Image 1 (tube, rainbow, N blue to C red):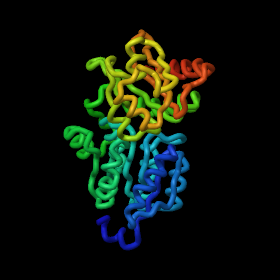
Image 2: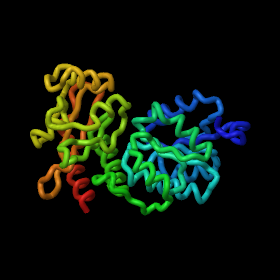
Image 3: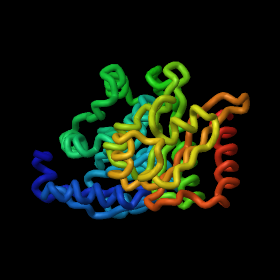
Image 4: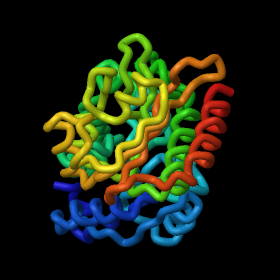
Length: 309
């Protein structure tokens, strides 16, 4: 099933992701396969390089947005140290240029986190068998482009919004925003001006149901980011249970995600055009405390300046 040579002695797996609940989820999913043995974990890119060099695992499951050293650079270093190790990227980013650069390191696969429930084990199996695996949500054209090249400078036209540099900035921005607001989870959306919708490009702490439901949002959706987009100003909901903003469906999705309060802050370019939205979510009612708005605005201004630079 997993390749005869590896199956005989078991397959040693190393996990790299800075979100501990996600690592726990991976451990649980992999535990369903007796051949797979998780032998170590890391939450930092530099720590991952060091531990992989020491442990020499058969398979590395690797995120991209990591502190210390991003996942793509981790993969490059790991390939130099342990060229026999197989690498499967599991990332929240679903854009072609990021997938192309990740696979260009010599990694065997790329799974979008929100699709991991159905694709993780298939991706693991394919990579261990020496095959290429890319999440189904990446279009056939994108799949062809990333599977036919190992050129790390390859860029496709599939994503007009996000480059690898922007992805790294967005991941770090979201991490900083969650820390600054004391949030339990959050997401960043970018504005698609052609279709007039917000699209999730980074998230932390959400399961597939939430990500699918709020994947694209326009000004007619019954949700916080939609109202913030329409009003061109920050929107805060202190209790999802009682606020009349939500439809029954959107309220139910939020409550199943254990979200009780939310804030959404629009992001604008220097010329005043909508760039996107950052939202932070809380498991408790009440939302963020008023003293966090200056740090939020400072982080937003710094981020928009960097991403346009």
